[in-house]
Image (cartoon, rainbow over all chains, first blue to last red):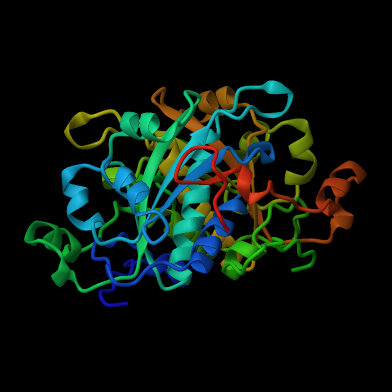
Length: 202
Length: 202
């Protein structure tokens, strides 16, 4: 790791989770290999899902395989994301499908399960020595139209994956974000015990 | 591990992901310690979220600390889940809150991000040598009323956590599920390249 921003965890957690963060400085000279891509997708594939319907879809754009396709995905990003994603070799889009549960019942776990698959993918990136950064900053309607995403599927996060570079490759504004410390809300604001609002007693 | 059901991954993925599955056979004699609980929650706490709003909430019921509270959560489960959760020492409920993004914008990533936090929690359980099993089979309205969950928060998954026991502790029907092989859909059905429906070329 060129720049580590390990989680300041108050108790030990697994190093995959400690080491994961969302860097912006990508090395434009180092592609993600197809073997690495296979491993990223395989990790997502084995995530759990309600009734085992696997309601996620992932769209992949690999700059080394299809530069024009990558550009089309890149063009969906906001300007502030384009500034740093321009160096990333791989883009993915996570998508939540309305795949029904058994018996045709509506599936209210589609986005939740897709988040679980994406988390697996991102942690696998850490395991491979890669970096990954998920983004909401893109034009979902444009992605839908450009790539033929069906109406009952919801585009969720764009995910940049690649090798880390020095923060020096970034413009000044983005570099500031890259170097800012990470933080999380106190445990008591998010984790309750026994009933709503009662801080967990840890 | 008493019963391993490692992911039959087609390419190597990190062992945390390989080893994770959703067992039903819990050891009623072995509690989850408070230090282990702290570690589970800390892993969830450091998950990524859109705009850093951390839109998840987790409710915890620890049988060793509050048997009556645990029973109230247990009573929300379906009959088929009660059959095996009766041996689990710890229950959690993941909840997606409508916490707005910056500038008060609606947050369409609430369930997705909550799924990421839950995945972190479940993988931390694996790291601790524990087992975890997420369930949709519970009465969310009852949980909402019983535990005071606000209207703008969506109960997602009940999560049983504990130590693994032999499948012999299970009734016959549940044991069959426990021993059934794991499977996932072919990569090409969920992972596309370049545009929707085009199988990834791996």
